[in-house]
Image (spheres, rainbow, N blue to C red):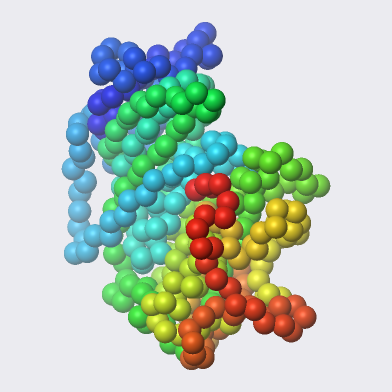
Length: 358
């Protein structure tokens, strides 16, 4: 694992208040101690045998391969605060990358992990995030095999930064991978559970909002759930994890790609009561808020009940719902049928309506 380029820190119980310094990016002994004692061991402890690659500290990893097709993705993660109810930036990084591979009809195999550490970052916090990374990777059954570290200066008045970049590879499992060009009018739209929990949990933590039932991020690796769906014989036309832009953003992309419309039933859209309250307080629409453990699935109408039954047997799909229908209406747009029977057009935010949450 090439975490040897630019940073380091010695972490001990006696020095739990120690913080990252610019000097830890110099490539010397201090850097080596951080990598060898505190970054690599959590990753190498994962059950996946490929994780032994992490201990080799090479510039890249050789990954055994026995598939004809490879699915490749990359992503970067920035979030404030770094820890929040139900997760942290490390869990986001693993789950987000795993899910991007899984929704392509592939089994994630290996990830890279690049850490950009801000000067002043508490080492104790970094250790917690590394532990969270390993736990999420273990849940997904994916190896972290290579990576990198860097240190950046802290700007006056700003909290210490942590940015994570990941890349992932997976083996394609489907002969006909999910793709928007396979969507047809009459197909149905399913989501695997309550939406908006992640974005609202992060924003509530940031704003200091308290609720009788605490909001928690839904960040989770969905690859096992998606694999079960693929193995069931259900013809999955399209899948996408609903992160930035939320469910509405995914469906707007469907309209753009297909020239078809989507009609969403508000009464069938799964939103928890705490999330609904938080959205109202913050002036947000749950359909446009980011998720990190929700997948939008488009399937034929004949497979709806079978898909829902399968999803609801899994903890990550317990609250799965069929929330909409693909139509041939023109112009192509996403339309919400409200609880009172009214209709309104759902659009992507023009820019960024909230601070970064993923």
